[in-house]
Length: 462
Image (spheres, rainbow, N blue to C red):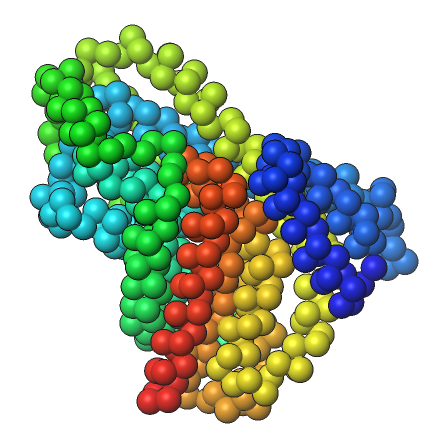
């Protein structure tokens, strides 16, 4: 099946998956895998690998499922495990509570959601949003205890901050690739500057919605004010003495610095042995491994190194379900990418080209919702829109930069079950998939709309 009927089938498949998870209580892993298999077969993916006339091989449905599953493990599997381990170690040593105190001293106890949102926005400029959420989640959890704030509001705020800079601000790969494809790769400072400005509306929209939805949806780690205060004071007494600020920050800030240096070296196209070392140390897996070493040193300094084996064991039990559900989301995305849907959307993009600045937004949003990856939506849309820039009337560097921003706005609209980030946010945020849809998916929709509104306003003056 191809063409528009396939898009209808895709929409029905997503609805079915939501019903299976939320109403029929089928486990998300089983639901996503079943829907992916059926959708792949309906979309015409062959049941076995097929050799075409030109000598190339078209992957069968089993191969596609395997590639989608393993691809997710390759990109984020070890990151999730190491991030969860760092979080567990920070909690055991009292470092998470120390981090919460540091954040409260900077922004005050009244604005923890805003603190998490801005923290995520800054961190995700050099770091992938998936990795950033895993790294910062221990601080979020500690702040929930420390301030008695809504866990869901904190989760949405953190996820939104990370997501915004992920699609708008280089040196994350998506915006860089889109800028290069659109012909403004030499103007990355301009792209970064406009990306900073275009972050304002989505951050405000996400913050407002986070505060609102936090009043109606609860997560697993919710506390009322009395319990939070009591729990915090008791925990501090148990630890006796919390780690120093540097030791508490080191497992988080050092990986961020290493990844940031790697991004800077790559963006500046620096070559040589020193550059290669920076790139190696800045690889998320290596950077988080170094962060884990610092977390283990904290455990040793508190004379609790004998607990390390049990902490590792418990972490793997916790991270396991997250890994498999996230990988299942990768399978769904791979099935969509292997079907004819993206190609059909690309061929018929001309029908949308009369919409001006809204054209790249809607095209990117369609691709994002269809296949899950923001980076794929950014790069694919840029490839489609690039040849049409002159016809659409976008000729100056600032106008083309706004097109890049519109593509980024679409690339955040919307995050749902075929997006690995959705499962990272919901699982680490202690939410069921149904609550994840009501909170994070809706938030990503509002952020996308707020973004394109701001970009449209800017396009009137720039």
